[in-house]
Image (tube, rainbow, N blue to C red; front, side, top):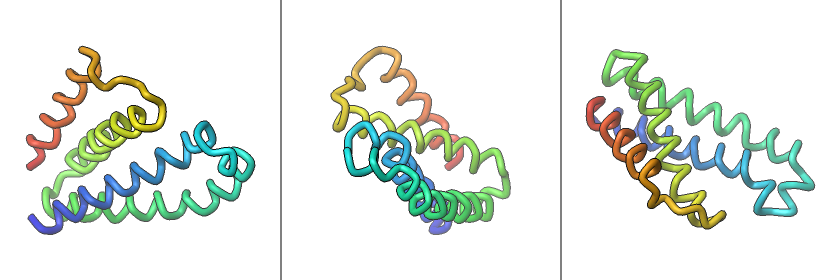
Length: 111
């Protein structure tokens, strides 16, 4: 279980960094002016977290689908609060609440 949780943590960290890498240019002038540098710095870190997270989740579940679904679900769970904090987009729409519930269900099934 320790490796499963560590894998989930790696996937979440990768998703957070990827979110700032792809959306940061909309909230930071520095990132917008240094997009190539941002991608060169963040890209390998994101790839590492995703690869290690996948390895840990697969090692625990022995199912590559589990790692994929967890990667998707953590991406959505990270995107919602960050979009709310930085762009003011409400997570409290029917569509977002339903999607959030489905992501939680995906994670629970993999546990």
